[in-house]
Length: 252
Image 1 (cartoon, rainbow, N blue to C red):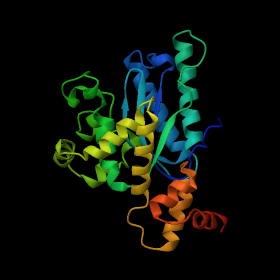
Image 2: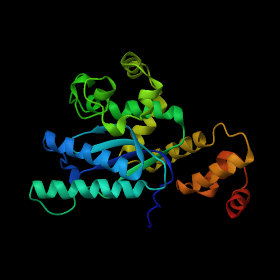
Image 3: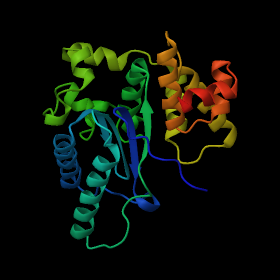
Image 4: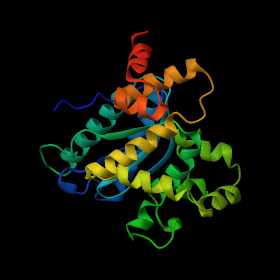
């Protein structure tokens, strides 16, 4: 089966990649720091904003905002440069990454708040630390001014929406949308049952079309949904339109 095309269009993307066979991709502190250097270098080169990150020993999460249709170029550069560094340093050959990176295009700004918490809470979920303050390789420590702020993180909406350390601390301690968190967790898993995937897919599609006010806006959202991999029949069902109506929008 042919794989779905990568959605590269400008906007917010939640990106995940893992080590092949779940192997560690960060062995010592220098590896974590070098990867962060590569992220910031790529952000400058490709005009990208980093909003949140968490580096675990065998995978990473990034929440980035692209201004051009260049997500794949950024990720190819990041992963290739780090794999070259890692293989050279540890005298190994072969693939470092478990296939191509996974990414989700985020269309709901409010959803971003829960997504940031999901990313930052990874060390707690994995029982690596008892308090997020103890983990050095996520943006949480920078947001709470415990670690220097990366240059590429300075445009994060977490900093602009919550201007003081106290406000950011309160944000991370407040309750989150449990439905959204469940959806993120399911999406991030490598194995999802067909039933789970279908239920999750339709729920996300419903959110995609929430709040549209004009036919023009609706039609743009239809094109975006097709690019995300949804079928015309799924879109028609959510919008309560006929499939030929969806087809006509796409032809125009």
